Amino acid sequence: MDLHTQQPAATSGEHVIVVEGLKKSFGAHEVLRSIDFHVDRGEVVTIIGASGSGKSTLLRCLNLLEEPDAGHVWFHGRDLTSEDVDVNRLRRSIGMVFQSFNLFANKNVLDNCTIAPVKLKLMSKREAEATALGHLEQVGMADFASADVTRLSGGQKQRVAIARALCMNPEIMLFDEPTSALDPEIVGEVLNVMHDLAQSGMTMVVVTHEMAFAKGVSDRVIFMDDGVILEEGSPRQLFSHPVHDRTRAFLSRYLDDRA
Ligand code: ADP
Ligand code: MG
Image 1 (cartoon, helix red, strand yellow):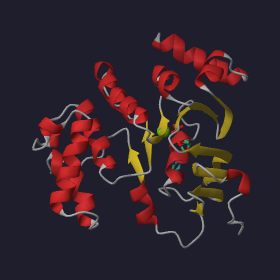
Image 2: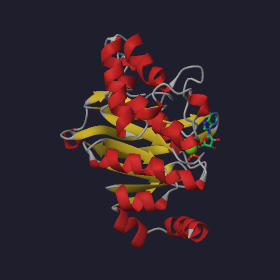
Image 3: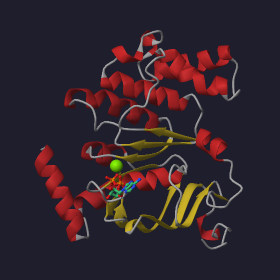
Image 4: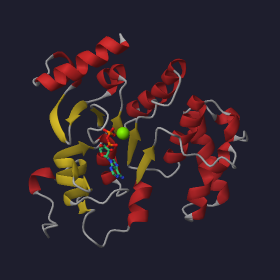
């Protein structure tokens, strides 16, 4: 990796995250082939693309769950790929919601939300509980605060996972196919929560196959294809006037399947 750690002047300002020349391989398989993009404060960016195109790997590079092979990831102007970054501190500022919820099965809903802020000494137990109840209210799960998470539906679990991430007071939320594991009739309750979060001004990057959400909620849509960003633009541009044949083919497949 080169030692160019100065964020380019053209990319400073209201950018929360700037990615430049990001590459990642697993063995001989180059999964990310020089990715450049940025996310501005308050922006909702959705990433669409076929399975295997590198969407999850890209998200995971943003909070260093994967270490990039080359390129830079700037978070508020700090180069995360430089060596002196406090990874734990960074991850507190970047909320992540996974397809598979990743809740602690042996803890109730409230404890799931308070364990990290208390353990990291960010808040007292009492403050953490008050904060958690506020976020559980926000996702419509306050009545379940003392419920065992194993008894919840998938949609309820995912809403708790979102509340839990919010309890860390993140500056940006990353969602990796948050509704892909859910029954179709439950998807909407999670998308509604994400919609409200977007309306509240949260900066979000959302990998999804929910094209109606991508169209209706995002400020910008990125189409990934085989490790590159093939095309990006406003939802209107990308869905109504895709430039590339591969974008058109992907979209027609989705719109046919899901219509
Ligand atoms: P997407 O989220 O778009 O489906 P991924 O980023 O999960 O794509 O994966 C892109 C490619 O990288 C896939 O071919 C996948 O098999 C491969 N890959 C992802 N993670 C690993 C890993 N830890 N080890 C080896 N290959 C991986
Ligand atoms: Mg994925």
